[in-house]
Each structure stands twice: as structure tokens, then as C-alpha cells.
Image 1 (cartoon, rainbow, N blue to C red):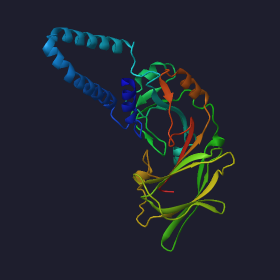
Image 2 (image 1 turned 90 degrees about the vertical axis):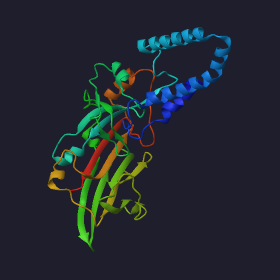
Image 3 (image 1 turned 90 degrees about the horizontal axis):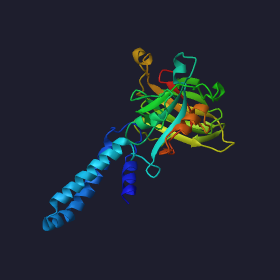
Image 4 (image 1 turned 180 degrees about the vertical axis):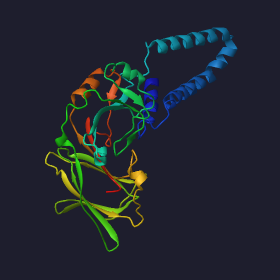
Length: 317
């Protein structure tokens, strides 16, 4: 019962953006839960102790249990996670082409390891020695539907298991202004992927449409936003389309990025695209095999598959 309670409490604090919560939050939640249970127990136990005069005995037993617990936890005999209380992790081979628009000719490829649950990945890395992972809050990755704010990366063997022919393409077909409204037509080619996520910067764009040939999948009007972005998720079958036309209607208050912003390391983006491929690359397979048995592969509807391609268009197109 206590195991189920702690498991529920820990999984309640799953963060939308991995690493977005403090590392110590999980420990505090579990500690408070245990303190509440112990306090309620003492309400009934202390009254008996006062009557029976067993204060010294109870104090000795409590100290012995506390010392035993410290030994078991510090020695690793009792681990923080087990097969019953598993830690959810994601292992994704990322091919990032967002910098190719800045003149870089080669995509950035790496394997990303992260968890939606609070805490660092120190124990997991002990089983991944030799795979050249580095962790920190500087290992951020924008997966369009969420952002990894703390994670681990490895560039070892990251060029195997994918090809450039799978890299999605965002191509500006036309960019014109008529009737005081600027419109930009972008062709979207997701290549072999039929599961993708697209985010549009609603601080720059008033409205947009998405169509396949003559069929409009997204009509004008009724657009919402979260943190300034409108996100679309698409999942199709085997014969689902992979080529789309995105028409952007610019806002009258749209501001062009300054030369300093445009040349910055992270220039403002107009459109972000992530395409998912349900395939494990050799490096991903190696990592999944080496992860501790108490790690469980976890994915929500917003999570990528084990192979994800990232691309984007800057505001200054």
C-alpha cells in the first residue's frame, strides 16, 4: 500500500518539460508523505507509550530502524527505484537541422536521454559508462511540443541508423504582400514520417492554413496559442500524405528580427517542425539494453519516437 502511494506521488510530479522542476522536489514530496504517515501513527502510539512507560524501548527501536534504513539506502541494497516503482525515461536519437538554415551543411546528430520525473540521471549513467554521455541543464533540446531543460547527450555512433534523405524540408515557395497583408507559402515535406508536430509563432503570424493538394486540413480562424506558439500534431497511417502546403498570414504587428538577433546563436524562429520515425538506431538499441532494469521507456502523445528529426524556419526568411 505504501509502495503504491509513493509511486503515485512521484509520478504526479511528472513535468511537461523534463528538467523543468527542481532536482530536490521528488525527495521533498516523498519525505513529506512519510512524515505525515509517521505523525499520524505517533498520535496513537505515544498515548500507549506514556501509559506503559516504554519510552526508552521505543526510542531505541526507532533509532535502530533509522540507522538500518540509512545503511540500506546508502549501500544501495534498497534502491530509490525498483521494477514496481520504475523511473520513466526517454531515449531519442535526434537529428537537428535547424542550424542548416544558418549555412551549416551538416545536421547535428546525437542521442538524448531524459526523464519527465524530477531528479538527475546520475544512477542511470553508471550503467551507461563507456557510451560518452554528458549531462546538464545546458543540454536543452526543443522537441516542438516540449523542451528538455535537463538531459544527457552522447555523440558516439550518432551518424549511424539514419540518412539525409529522411531529413524533413521546409521550403519557402513565395513571400508576398497584397491588400496590406503579407502572406508566405511554405512547402512542408516530412519525407518518410507520417507522425509529426508543427509549431507556428503566433506573435508573428495572425492566421494560417494547411492543405494537401486541394484539401484544406486546417482552415482560417479559431487559432489558439500556448506561450506564443500554436502547435499541431499529426499522425497518419501507412498511406498518409507527407507533403503539405502551409500558408502563413502575417500579423500587422509582426517585427523583423534585428541583425544582431538574426545572427545570434539562437535566432527567433517562425516555424518549428519535428518528424518522428519509429525505428531504433544502433546507438539507441545499445542504450536501451544497458539501462537499469528499473528504467521504463515512457512516452506521451507529445513525446517523439526513438528517432526524431528537427528543422525550423527563422523569422527573417
